[in-house]
Picture 1 (cartoon, rainbow, N blue to C red):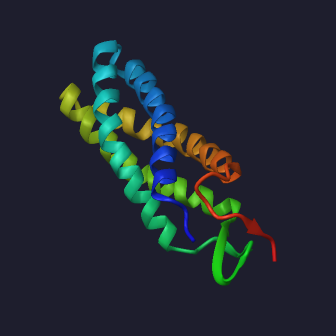
Picture 2 (cartoon, rainbow, N blue to C red):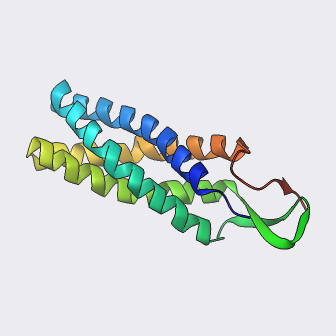
Length: 151
């Protein structure tokens, strides 16, 4: 039993709410235009939900930074639980794809390389921390994932 696709979608939506709010704020700081900031945030709302879902499904396939647990009533299958550093590495890998997406969108909206790169690279710092916290909260939410017993 693996984490459900619905869980990945809902997790992506909750992250996107946090991430979009951060992007809008940073875009407003660098462009000094609420209109440009909202455009950037609105476009990335759609692109990043899809990218996050794909990122999440890929990470489910790799067990680096996880330890084996036994699933209640299902001792014949192997299940994994994330270590703290895995959440950090996932955040960094997600940020790479997220930064490229933000830079492209910001460039399309502002037509200014300096502002697009400033928004994208500032997000590296804000989003890695926010993503790490988001991952840790979702580790505590049992819905949509197997129940683990430490072996």
